[in-house]
Amino acid sequence: MKVFITKCIAAVVLFFNTAVAGPDKLFLDFVNYSASIDGYSSLCIKNYNDEKEMTNLFILLNEVKSEYLLITEDDYNVLKSTYIKTKSATISQLMKLKLNSQKKSCNKYLKIFERFDRKKQKSLEDLEKIINGY
Image (cartoon, rainbow, N blue to C red; front, side, top):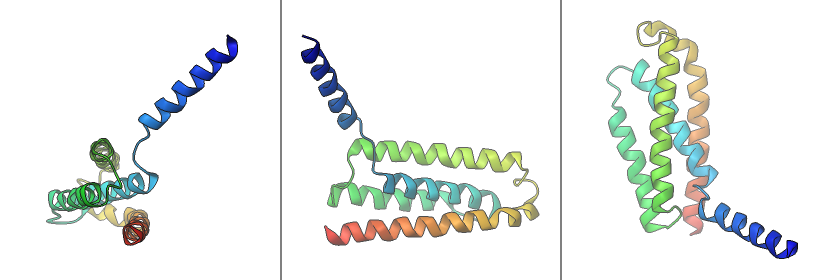
């Protein structure tokens, strides 16, 4: 009886982990880097159109979802939520550093976001490899 219960619990745990497995780390990284860069840029770059950047990002993710089936609708929604949370957190942290009122301070943090941009580009290249292999 104990063996049966143990096997049932293991099966439920395995099923649950599979059923709620979120988007691949590649997509999460790509979205997080994009959101952080957009948050920084919206505070530090004059006339930055963050709505356009977000729209372009999710057009790409929607294409990945519908044409290549690399993410599910649930993954897409998780990625959208992740983007909003990450961008909001980035802006909040940068505002605590007074970047919204002291634009000269933006240069102090530029290197960090340039590094994020390189990582974002790497994620995009990895995604491109996956799509090309599809």
